[in-house]
View 1 (cartoon, rainbow, N blue to C red):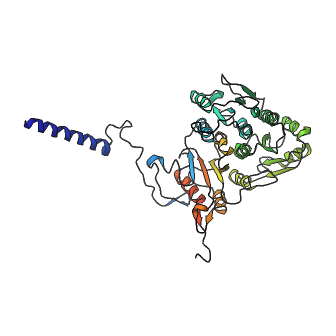
View 2: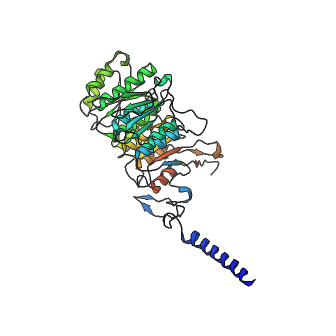
View 3: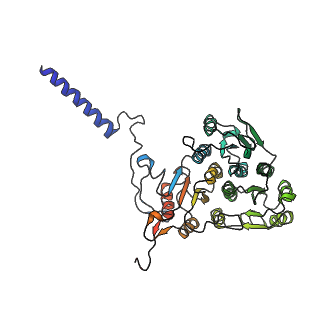
Length: 408
């Protein structure tokens, strides 16, 4: 029956045509024909005075925008989403790792409460921050809280949730609320709560401006790492709440470290702090990016990152997006314990950051698998920190062979 053979041939031709249309012309794609795996080459040249490192803007599986050899990106432009991603990265809930004992909730626009709350993320309390739009967890945030499943512990006072600032407490959880009439009072409330929970004063007070988030956010990352508590000051006057806490008998030997240059926190403030408490030291820097690097390098007793050699972790965030930094403080409570570096551009890595990374660049002589390495988190999508800047960052972190006289 000749017609049967012709029918089969026609069906095969139609299938082949559909295959070609779908895979080569995008016909039938849900997104109107675009493909998430289209590779776009970045032309060589210069961007902002730096060499562009060739790569793909939207390569297969999102590389290198999502990750490179030495960087991992938490993408997006909403700090609320970033806080959920960071908390779940710090406390994966599908493996054998233990959930956090508690979770801290902060309003997504209240950077002062977020910076102060970071000390609760540090061990032994271990309460990562989730950000709440308009002070109330979103549906996704509520689901993330349930997924994290905080159980409470003696170190959290059996509380499962802390709220810092003006935040609506989620239902169904034992909640400890910390609030106050101003940022200084909120910070003191956090400090007193942590001291009560760990039955000890902090190892250090970190005093920052309540008016200059670009100089205050490095304190949040350090506080999440160390548990040192953050207190607020004005440019020329220390708030009463801050001074009263420092003057308490149990805090008289706690050293005080002030972050920022004198045009942000004046010398008069240092004099007031010196009269109220123990030793006072300033960690300065002529601009926010330099100040962040200064804190990364700084060491005095137990205070300061003291990252002056290779083999460490970093977070790269935008100077003008303080809530991004607050959102990802949980990353600095474990893993590579990353320190904060700041960039003031979406396209260009600041020279002070690049110079620092080149100074601590890891190297090896014969066997790279035995070498120590750096790793960094990039915070925000490529409109916040571009793929070119991420690539430059990756290159500055990269392990390199060390040439010696014997090896040539």
